[in-house]
Length: 143
Image 1 (spheres, rainbow, N blue to C red):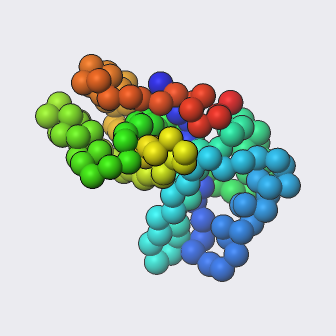
Image 2: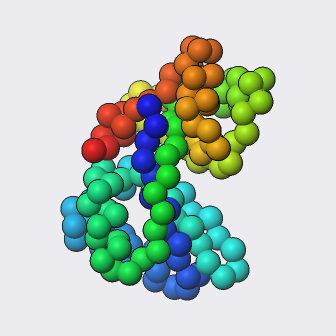
Image 3: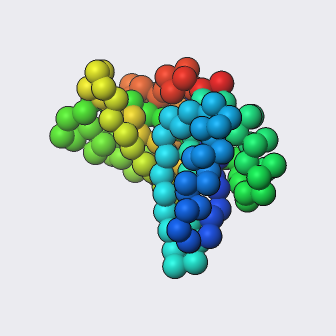
């Protein structure tokens, strides 16, 4: 139930994100989720895409610095307290969150939370044991 994610390390300058989205679009690759974090010198674009192997290939060919990692996607109802319930389970089990991002799913009225954990298998077990829905790659239409 882990999902492969790509991190792209970018210089913090005008047009760099556009270069990536242009390459992906020209190669018929769809971004399913993304997050962008920055510092004064560089940014990290984290993406879940519909075809990770093709994405890795085309971005490497274009000279981008990339890293593949595993994240965990958790589905929660889009209502007050939805995130809090997940965080309580993780906190009670002593599981640290390295980072997370989220997006809203229409028409299901659910939020999909993307988590990066030091030990994703431990996190998945804790979540599933607590009755929290962990989404697989099929939920994000990833191959």
